[in-house]
Length: 73
Image (cartoon, helix red, strand yellow):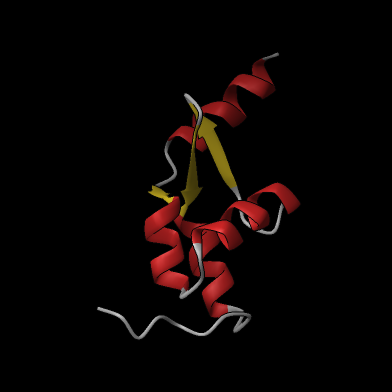
């Protein structure tokens, strides 16, 4: 039980982004981000019916070169 609580506390300290912002940063659609969350390709958390995507997961996806960086400002 203590281990589960420690893991949850660590997750709470991770910076989270909206699906719209993650999509913009990765140059993908919101639907793609939702699909990647469902597939486990991106780490995130559902809070009150809304998905939040962990910033470190977005950075990892971008650094892996699996997506083109967004050219939009």
